Image 1 (cartoon, rainbow over the protein chains, first blue to last red):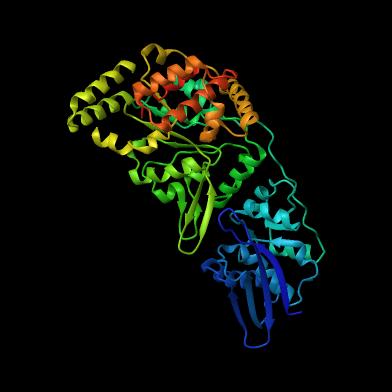
Image 2: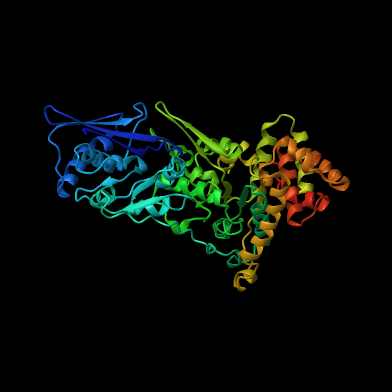
Length: 379
Length: 132
């Protein structure tokens, strides 16, 4: 049969919609076309697939090859379609059997040697693939994080040949058992901080109620140390929280299985842009606030941050999620983070300055002074 | 100084629940060996307080809606009097008022107290004494 259909997944924000990879071989001048809104990485997969098939001693069919990635209106990015496209060509040209293909979902980037490279977001893909009831064939590097999903059926492979042997029924891929770490997370201990009893009490209250904190004081008194220790006071993550957090981390980088259940602590530098904090880009990626989901976002030197940048934090701080809209697509990321801010100036100094400035500016000075005195008294 | 203050003023500070001073340490404190409660012990108290919250309202206190604050965070008579005094002296905004009540609820939960009393209110007000 000159047609093969395989299943894979795309990534759109936290969502991983199913993508059908259809490969058709027709008579005519030899050509290789990929349709279905492929981005640069997907277009380049032609050359990787051709080389990988040839190195693995398969025959690359000299026919008119059309690859369709459906749904047609969903943009497809990254190299994760290399493996399904290669298998589709093999199946359509009769080099591997087609009958079991719809039992699997497949993603993986091919090296020219035929080895498989890891893909981004395998945890987010697995979360949705679980509902389809199919097993997921993934590169070895990405399989660990996908196996963290409860009830997931993950088949790790390290090369194209291994996957072909599995599909041909010669040597099956061993299913990966989820290895969820059960040990307690080791966090920095609050006992290491000298003195600062009041600040420690405030951290305890913040941890108990999920409140945000502003630490102020001269440099070198342990503000950063205190902030970094808040994650160690927070209650253990529930499984659902750990899963959400891990899925978000896996969208931007490889997620190590040992990190499972560790509350994230993000401390972006004060030169960070608004997009870096809340997320964005033509294909919206999560920002620092989403990476700190269920954890702590520490903004040191708060006043040094660009004011516009800080303003964008206001809305997600209230709502617990962020909707990023770009011309082509929208993404919605959760962002339930706990904010810890630090600044060098003592609060009293700031307050006194404000009062002085206000007093000079106001016509009715005496009223202000009266109010200030009243405040002084209570402070 | 004015520039520094100008950059952080506004609604963002208003949205931070707890303001605390981290003063420079005295020589004695600096030379003494670090001592204090280890995180693990504090975490058990935190966990207990969080369990109370989840059982009562299904979420942590910071996420309480304004109607929930009205129904779940009402202080007793003495607490109410103290709060009234604080509102007039510090001329607190409506948002600040709600935030104080949420923090007071957490302080009460840490002490496993079913009702918010004046000590809890006093401590909560103390962490917002700038009246921001």
